[in-house]
Image 1 (cartoon, rainbow, N blue to C red):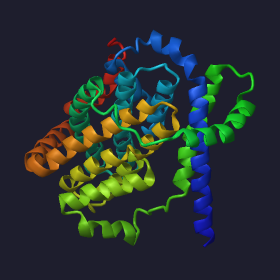
Image 2: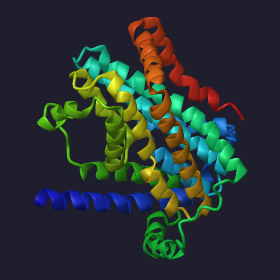
Image 3: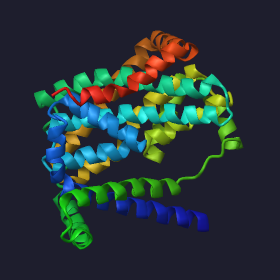
Length: 345
């Protein structure tokens, strides 16, 4: 009982800090305009590179997506640039799995499976998100979903303003807006870490982990499992990193992981969707909803109609990259792509 109460308090504190962080970030967002201009962030491609690179730096995509929304709320990024930055945050988050797999490999679990899971995750994420980005761009520029609204959120924003407004004012005082933004980033990362402590921990050798092998042989089951785990953890980095020890110990095979990654890449937008409702900009919700629907469309299309061919292609690419050193080196050099994208105005 005490453990449940402690987890509840951690979850409550995480939510409070999450809302506070969004308020701080939005208040300090204007200070980033000159910096973003110096990076020539003025297109969907440069915004994609920025989100991608930031996710590398903090090893998580969700905080970067939240930052993108606050920059939009602070009128620093346009709707299309915000859409690109959120997409980039998800591509960068897939790198976390590769990083953890490499560390796991160096710690003594010397099986190529540890690294190949990261490569597979990146390939699946990229091949789904890039077509989804193209479709989402068309949807946003056409205004197809502009009429979507969740109803009157004015009372919610008034309540949040009344609760968090004085707190933000007390914390920031006369601080420069740049410092306020950095403070918000720190609080945001802290909120995710605290929320993680509210979740039950799964030990690598536990029967709970071992039991996963009993139901991983159906694509539909793994697809739903990926959606469920990510919806609970609110982090695609966490839900996909779980795959590293499972694969290294032989509990799951690569062909069973692909639909799991697809499912995880859909519900990873749950926290971003919630954050969009806390930004006093109605179109913020439309941006995130568009991304989520487009990723869902291509994921379901692949699962239902092309899964066999898609699976063989992705597995072949993963095998080629991980079995030959020069291909793996070229792949790792490819993670520098977001730096090049930043220069695309």
